[in-house]
Image (cartoon, rainbow, N blue to C red; front, side):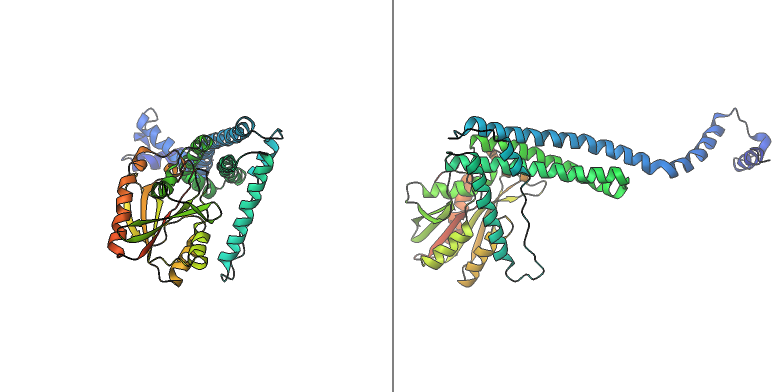
Length: 386
């Protein structure tokens, strides 16, 4: 019959003596015995224990996301109820809930030919549909109020999507106890929470119509437009004309103070194509994502079309620049994603003078008297006039 004697004898030998030297009253001996017994146990169950710990951490984060999602929904409903003077007052909850679940299917990209035109059509249809839904929900509201509601609902929709995706992978990981799913979700959770908190803060700025970090480009160009005649270049996009040291300046930005980014790509096509304006240089001013460790509000100069989005506007601008051989220069203000969608920080506002002087420096260095320059302020022009 199997007993502990052979095992103790062998263990005693390993420890420097025979079985007679093995003392069960010696605590050191028991540490070795327990250690040897625990190793197989943890080999079998350690992953399950780790999964439980990770599930607990993700569960707490999921509760935070759900709270943010519900708060955003409530704020959107309350804003429409209390701030929008609708001619047909009704409960906007159903409209808000329908908006939160709205989705957009991107066009097929197996054949890349014409993909930008397809994207342009899809996004325009989406924007017009959402605008119509908001106007239907806020009957009698002004265009500026409608854009505020749109921005609030966009932030609430993003929060709703983040929550649903995290919940999906949480439940999948819980059901399958897959460490690969859970560990990946645990790694990205701090970034998702950071983005969700920024979206929640952004709703406050949208409700009050305050400038956000992304509006630094329109703010600079808008200041150049002060006192000048504004003309419509495209939907929700205006331009003005000015002069600087013998150069003709064309100033372009989204029409403020409504919360919109306008259509700069379409505007450039119209200015160059229909109106016959042939700029010798194109300067774009925009907010740009900073790297960790870089200073918020720092200014940098470069080459290329400085504009975000899914790429439609950027393609249109680059296409015109290539067709007419127009060099494209960029001046950016560095900031984080959180800074871009929340109330404009002092560091970003303080970059105003430096960006302006950099733009004028580019004009002097890259063009000569008698030439023309098109300057575009890219970004959300919420709270920024012209």
